[in-house]
Image (cartoon, rainbow, N blue to C red; front, side, top):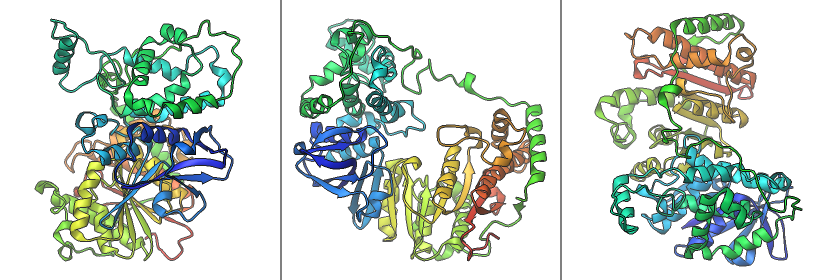
Length: 583
């Protein structure tokens, strides 16, 4: 089946091991759902000897007799170190695949147990979207876990206040579930309760609707801890829907298997003197909306859409024109690597866009994009280098690089398992043995590498790639996309460079540039020239940030520029790479 790597801390004492909240959730799921019953699953606790910088919970090793312990600084395989834990590593037909992230790892374990496991939900899509784009995935995978950590770190803060994320789930459960073919579900529900009405509103029996899913598996152990300090009487008054959901799962046969584990976890929580005597608790105010991104009360495209006036664009560009006099980055007439020649005629069909099932009308332009990217990487790469194709999709670029650079190792990093599966089929046909797959978000990646590559990584994803390359002192070849969707967040803020940040260019001015940069619709487009100017402004800011980090940089258009409306090619080389030119 594969190997599952989980985080733990310190030395074992009396059969007890301290683990992270994420590790507890995974082990609880394994216990409840018998996920280790079947093909052999190696469960490895990677123990850090350093003092943990986050709260931990106890797990009794006797509950998991097949646990294996490894020290964090031991000779773990590269695949176990490449991403933040939890990580699942498997190998099939010489091809190594790494799955990272709590939701993705549990989805993989369920998928291995049964390809159509009911907990994966409709069309196996439960928690398939990454936390960056899905409000629901972020709630299950990030927000609630952070609440548990806050709860454990500052228990006194919750003596008079119900945790905010408990209130958010209460509000979520009060809304109608978002279901495919909802009318059919309503009719079935009406029949089950003996109603003659065929349009009965379906209640949230579980977190995602009338059926239990993986979301419940992740949320339940967190809420077991969060609700442990509150009596049923208090919960029945403040969060009755959460209590009903919680009680329903607690009574289910599957979760009885893991109850002993959670009971022991809670028994070790520090006691807190409750001067409130649990007489009354405040319920935090939260938005009156469900946790689904598509909830009409949340998602209002018209109110969120940005409309830019021409005078706003001209004002922003005027500020940029002034900034441009203070740096030496110019757009080269030749793309980096144009002295390297990639000949498609020398390559097998399976490597070419046609072999990757690119629609016929897009094949020529796709081939031109790949050629520009590949030639730049070929100029930079040395034997033994590790290349990471971020947001790789089904691997058009990564497979090409693995073929033309057989002495390098190529990692395809992609969040969508179906896209990676399409890559697997092509890899097997080509017999490539220098390529590995990583399923997960860019944020989870922490492995060492030499060159980072991203072709049309959307919006902020391009900047996360650049930031990751800078942190690892890796060269980069990036062609950004979706400039209009960039926005400051917890990982990246705009403007990027010191020069742009210290200028008169405000955050709104920057968003205007991004919005206008997406208006590049062919050479004849009325806004194309202005859009290209805005693209160049944002990409100059990106490269100035890399210069600040000690990089030599190169900015150009792909050749021919018509291969894509988003055709800027950004190349960065660490200054310590003295044997590689930036021209």
